[in-house]
Image (cartoon, rainbow, N blue to C red; front, side, top):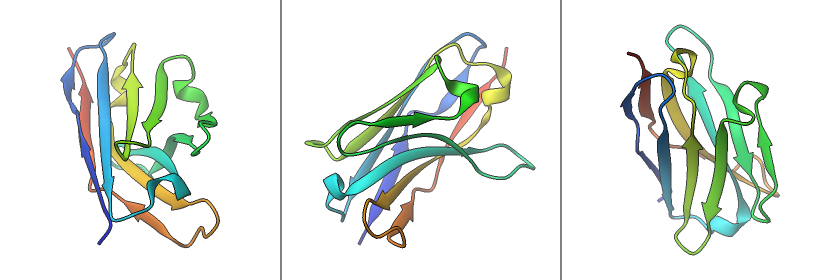
Length: 118
């Protein structure tokens, strides 16, 4: 059974930082492109960042220079370091795992909330 479990969300002031973690189980981690998505209230889910097994990364324009995605294949975990947070980053953040060869094999975590507010 595949499980993606996010953690690390919370309330932070503008300009602050958070580090999200996503622990994967039930998958051969190295075979998956890992990603973070977010969904603010009343909006559609959007891509934040992805990372391949080899470490190639892709970021949405609105987080470039502020967020960093990384993965630890030994721990089956992907991270999202978020710096210089702004209120517009407030959303539910979801972990995603998509097989690098078979895209139909895709899984989602249940999400972790991030609120940026003073």
